[in-house]
Image 1 (cartoon, rainbow, N blue to C red):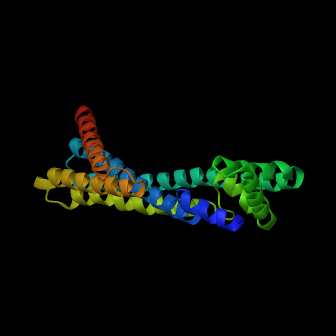
Image 2 (cartoon, one colour):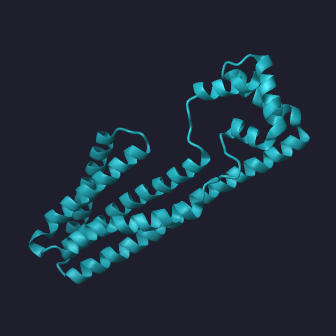
Image 3 (spheres, rainbow, N blue to C red):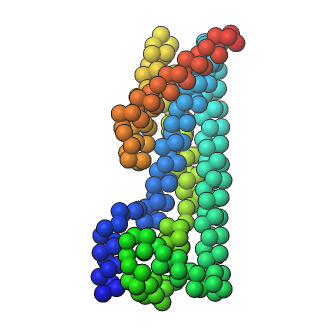
Amino acid sequence: MVNSVINELKARKPKKSSQTMEERANTLRAGVLGSNDGILTVVGVLFSVAVATTNQFTIFIAGLSDLLACAFSMASGEYASVSTQKDTEEAVVRTEERLLKTNYADEVEAVVNHYTNLGVSRDTAEKIANNLMAKKPLETVVSVKYDLKLNHYMNPWSAAFSSLFSASAGGIFPLAAMTLSPVAYQWPITILAVCASVALTGFLSAKLGDGLTKTAIIRNVIVGILTMIIHYSVGILLK
């Protein structure tokens, strides 16, 4: 009876990604954000410098320096952010381990309340809770109270390396367009390269977050165009 109710609840409850899938999604998220930042920061520096000087080597060094700075900055930021999240998850598990030893009844009650909130009767919820707590108490309470999967935590190194490589790859688009194109066409080619690349990151971010792809693409392209206009204007002012 209890097992059949649990199976029915799983079927009725909206399916959520497992922790392993969340880790993968977090790595992809860091990659998409890193790529977008790499594109915009590098093109910003390129536009500002290219307005002030026509020396291609100077433009290239400025763009390359910014690309490296952006990549390592994004990587360190992701590492710090995801490390904090991982520390929080591990702290939650340690707290629940202690509560299972010192306040077991309240932990069981939390599981019971979880199932009654899903529409299960009190008697059935108590049976389900007792059944689960007898087998995997810690795994049950962290799943019910925090939606965590035991021993699956966010990996800061994966996020950091994903951001590092994607920011570097993203920055290559405007850098290559500006420095490898014929001088007479480097501006329109760079603008097109930036618009295409930020449109791609917008599409990927929308797919990753189950958002509206058209909206995300348009938003990213507008931000990219504004970035180029602002930095071009800065270059004009400093010229």
